[in-house]
Image (cartoon, rainbow, N blue to C red; front, side, top):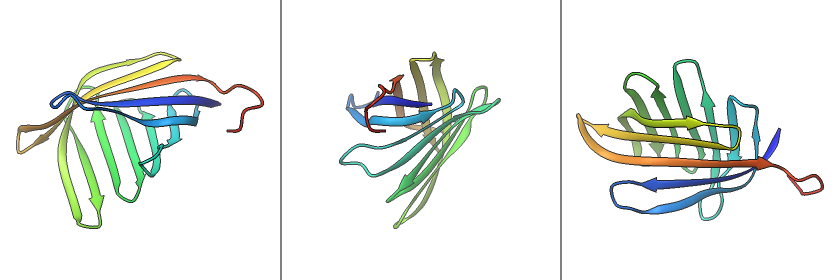
Length: 131
């Protein structure tokens, strides 16, 4: 189903907050796919699998975050400058038909390299509006 998506990324270490998706997306209950808004470029896909959450970004850079519900996972970031791999750890998670919230940490060599909160707000696409 086509939905209106607003997604906010909060950096919990430095307090920065940014809207990275604000537009139409496709959501089937287990997978959300939407284009990032300016100045970002790319397509984000958020998948809910039985043992993990998977967040993929395809654009100028590519990244894939695998965040298991129970254990640590991996984040792989690929750019023209090379590839970086970090550990991921889920810190909070909630999902309803209208909202998705994912808190996670990034770890490098066991030390915290980042702590983020992603909040997705979903509403039905109004008929007659372009998708």
